[in-house]
Length: 128
Image (cartoon, rainbow, N blue to C red; front, side, top):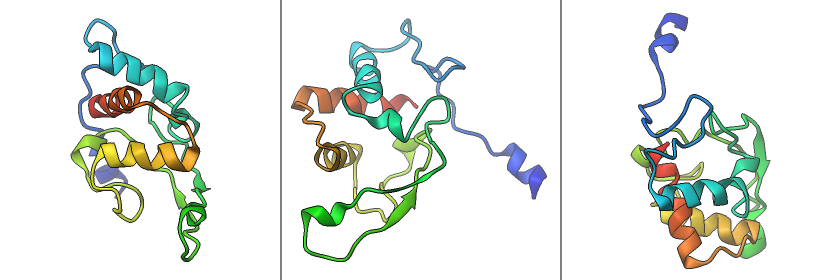
């Protein structure tokens, strides 16, 4: 089993440096703005730190605050590497697109991202 696990790797991400930072010579302006937002205002870095883009912890987002229903409980943070190739999103697949996911966390975390900021945040994980 360990030999098999050793052959599994993240998909190529040619715009990423070994540190997990974007290579500014290969990235678009939107991707670079998205990286800044990801690490700052959007608060993604809290659970998805570079270079593996996961903290390997579990979190309770308390989404039941927004609707009458059962508590959702905690779920483990997964890596964002290759995320564009694995929809749907969140632990139960309730978010169909990266745009949906950014909007979900915009509401849950109260980040108040503008429409342009949301587009930039979406551009960033597409290169991971």
